[in-house]
Image 1 (tube, rainbow, N blue to C red):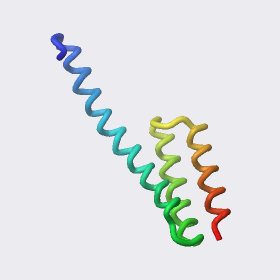
Image 2: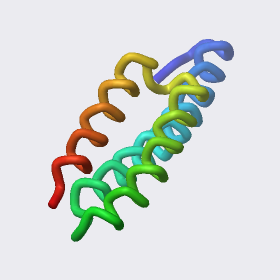
Image 3: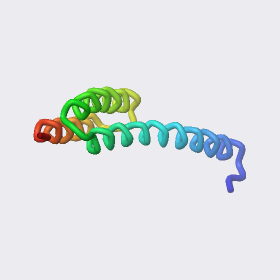
Image 4: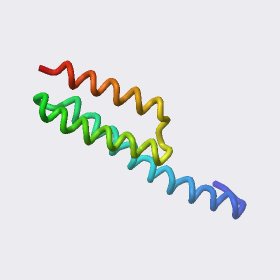
Length: 84
């Protein structure tokens, strides 16, 4: 455990940030799973639009690199287009 006052403060800040980041990441991963588990193409497209929006907001918050987000969005859109 930290002994210095500044180290204690950094620990508190770090724990808050970790919780916040975990929620953002969980929200994004859930949206991606909804696209992957959609029953038909129309629901998959609706879930895709929602997932793209959430992935973009994750990038804006600085929790995901923009190239990683582009890769996620590309894979999801190819997945939806291939659905029958």
